[in-house]
Image 1 (cartoon, each protein chain N blue to C red):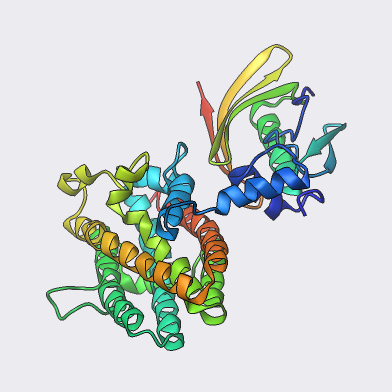
Image 2 (cartoon, each protein chain N blue to C red):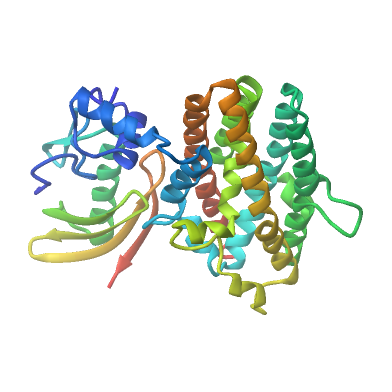
Length: 274
Length: 96
């Protein structure tokens, strides 16, 4: 495929393996090295690949913008992320519906509550905190609901829906909960060049309290969410013997996550002059 | 136009076998997306500077963003560019 200039294949090889055309034997070895867990865990491999893509020497542009975010960046986040979180519930529900493992069901229920359901009035969901952040910046939630997702968000949602509906539920878990590494503050101790945002902005008076509440929630929750889920993925992928599939599906998921984060930036440009 | 001696005119990769004529010159690219990126970049520089063509574009960086200097008849134009997933220009900023 790379020899025939298939853009998807060539770009993946360029960004993950090598830019230099290689013979079959060399390429096989490079690919084997890339997927090899060595003496480490699947969780470690997933984190390593995630860090390389989003927190390596060239961090993702959205993450760079979030270090000290403008109003426009936060509003772009609100508008596109509402669609992400609605899909999130569907994805977690597919996983629950397709597994018999009760520790997985319990994990997904807890995750859905945190992200979407909330607990009474004292512990609003991540979704509610997102909408409140938008309102604090002058964007009414009714207006947010009226805004359709941008093309990259729509495409990413379609892929995540398809993975969780059609592929093995362990692959679905890796695809979705691996993404929660984005706000895992421990990654900085594991090789990430920067964090999701600079924690100093939680004390910045120019950032609304509602925006701080939203960012703080992810900051607190996503360490546990991502690492607990990756522990389950590790356990069940070995039990079901589908580690290779899980790795491939995870890589596919983070490719679309990259595009989705770009959609947040694309949306933010619509708010730059408002 | 002067392009890298080896590999794709945008990313220097040696994978692929995609050729396209740009500014009257047959050029090698690793894929069609890189060809679209290159053409869009040249068109944008010509439009902004009013140049008839471009002699060379020196580039550093990667797909997250490239720092470029365009050259034409001894003149220099510095800019940063980032492309979207289809090869369109996502970000273009001029550098002093």
